[in-house]
Amino acid sequence: MFRNIFHLKSSVPIVALFIVLLILPPIIPRFYTYIIALMFVTGLLAMSLNMVVGHGGMFQFHHAAFYGVGAYTFALILTKTTLPMWVGFAAGPIAAAFVGLVIGWFCVRLSRLYFGMLQISLGSLIWAIVFRWYSLTSGDDGIHGIPMPSILSSLNSSYYFILMVLTICLVGMYLIFKSPFGTTLQAIRDNPQRCEAVGVNVRRHQLVAIVIATFFAGVAGVLFVMLEKSVFPDLLFWVLSLEIFIMCLLGGWFTFLGPMLGAAITMALRTFVGIYTEYWTLILGIILILLIFFLPEGVMGYITEKLKGPITSSIREE
Amino acid sequence: MLHVEAVKKSFDGFLAVNEADLVVEKGEIIAVIGPNGAGKTTLFNLITGQLKPDTGRVIFKDDDISGVPPYEICKKGISRSFQVVNIFSRLTVFENVQVAMLSHQKKTFKLFSPTKGQVVQETKDILDNVGLSDKANNISGSLSHGDQKVLEIAIALGNQPELLILDEPTAGMSPEETSATIDLIKRLTTDLGLTILFCEHDMELVFAIAHKIMVMRQGRSIIQAKPDQVRDNKEVQEAYLGDSA
Image 1: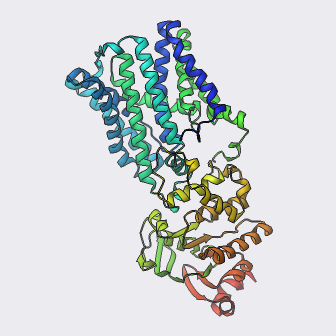
Image 2 (image 1 turned 30 degrees about the horizontal axis):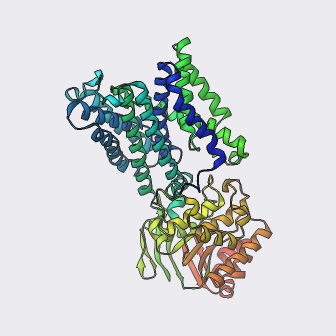
Image 3 (image 1 turned 90 degrees about the vertical axis):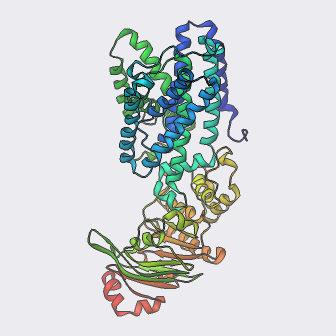
């Protein structure tokens, strides 16, 4: 089933990049290993958001809430129970998907902007619970020094584990992207009304997409805990939701790997520009303005356009 | 096959469709005509579920389908094209039809098998039939208006309907494209045995292919009869043909 959708030509640079990522950790400073691992985690989160935003056309404005639910579920199981780690590892994404199901069930009943507004309010509600429920979550202190099995305790080993999980997730997401479900989802993005007219139950497909996307957001949350060994309420604050939204736009939300690239660019900027100025968001703002005017399809969209010819330039919506 | 019985629909007090009746029997080509704003598109939206009738009933093959959501109605065998081009503009021409076919075969929830291998032959057949196969891999948003209107029909065919509803299929087409579309519509009834309900402003087209014509005026259905009877009807001449003559 892979032969049909993985092309040799386009997979060469990806495989090359993968090999580079495999040999990097022992030869680069620890700090860079950490930053790259953080890019993996945030990239996965942005990719999961893009499933609903870029491919599904839904205004998922508070996606970080599900990231946080995944992270907190994992952290609480590790610190408050004696259950083995893999239970937490499975429970994080499942809890995120469950919350996604509940919130999504209400949201898909609303259209576009109202969908987004309800998302923000329900997501913020979860943030407020985490922030206020001091006895369980330690509020804004967060939970730190979460114990990990020795196999994951060093930075390099968690780097490799995160890379492995990321790869599995990306392959799974790509299969979904190229599956009948993925195609239908993109058709819903382009034209929900027409989809209904060809017999597609739009709400049900949107809800399934939200559940899948929030599941992957939960995976990203679990990976974050593995890397950072701590959780804090900022993980589900709306600012992070906005940041990953920008990553999708920056990378190219109609492409598959765009959000990954967007996450890498944003985080590299924050790290390296942050050394010189504390106003790095100013730089991000300027980049965003330039992006809207010159690269409306995002960086990845621009590259694909250059390689394959301008296939979408004439159909920019309104 | 399809019976529309005294349906009424008003928007904020404006009666768009006022007790309209329509009967479509299997194998027929029925045209709905009427001046702008007569309620033709609203009537179609009431039949295919985009709108719910305030009163009245829509019966399809002995089922009451008034107020049923569009995706359910589509599954019962009614499929439609739209007056304003209504396609999946970022997908290829092939994928546009493929989505309809996937939906028809209930495969839209398949998660891990590539779309590329699904319903390929069925989709190709439709594109061959409407004459879009050489543009199959173009992004549909980049097609000419005429081709997009043809794609509209192709998507509707993807559901393999029994009743095909076309809302102004030739609007904005060049004369050549129009005559090609007329041929296509005729072929669909003879080759595929489709029943077709359409509305159109092009009187030449209407009188060339319709078996029966239903005339609407200010939301009411005035008459449904054979083309020559419609042409001779006083009320119709006054309401419609008189204006354009």
